[in-house]
Image 1 (cartoon, helix red, strand yellow):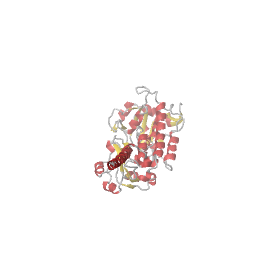
Image 2 (image 1 turned 90 degrees about the vertical axis):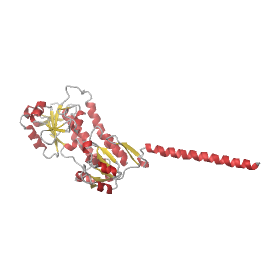
Image 3 (image 1 turned 90 degrees about the horizontal axis):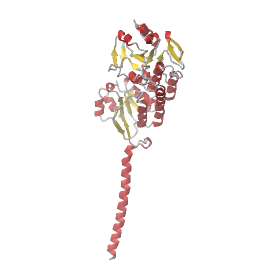
Image 4 (image 1 turned 60 degrees about the vertical axis):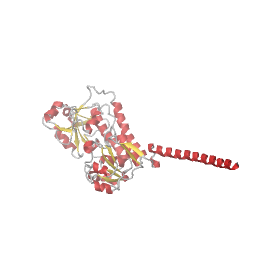
Length: 373
């Protein structure tokens, strides 16, 4: 009689421990499943981000080896302290002595629009970063994807996305603290700009009209250009804004008929800005344009609007368009602050001509004067 009772006791004990073990295992499985939702970089848990195209991209841990095709993204990675994770860059970026000095493991993988896929594969990257605009994607990106290499699309120059993209790159490289500082720098000046322009209504007649010329004569930057996007955040009207292209050839007569308040002209370098401006202002018939009459013709180094420094470039434009609202802002000083903190040892090209310092604007006869004169 006692034997069956003993067996029952053993069964009860066994059942208890079985249930206890099931509870423990259930907790472990639940904990493991929830880890996919966390982004705690220090624990090397999986990381999920969303790129410029809206693609969700996941990584099992922080990335250690990056092929970076856009120079803008390379500069961003350097600024957040992740330059040592870059193992491949475009041929164009490889010629930038400053960036290469901050990317000790990087080598050229060819043109950014048609990189050497075999070389990319040989570098065993965790990630390839490509431009986040359709017309600038690498032409053989499908071959890279076919090699089972993760691709992330970013711009790293559009002021509307710049801070978020900087944070995203910080998340996947484990440099979140530094990336937050870089993102905040851009955000604070974009916020300042928006605050000072909040009463300039979208339909206001006081919105300044501008003509923005590429570095070739009579080539207008139109509605699909990044420069157009930046200036529309400043409540300014692009006289070529109705043209659904990045750029469009226009005639001298068309520019004269548009009669813009301000003319901007891109320069590839800052070396010959004075010559470029003088030639533009001496074109036949331009003396009838309001911008020329008022001396509001400016040459801007192209990188200032198509790089991670574009928030500062936006301040240059805002100061030109609304001199009284930004009289106390010195874009040159702010640019140097950015470079000193995030790109030590780097100095931008002469970024803007005529120069805009604190309490200065350009008035007639091409002279610099205090704002409000």
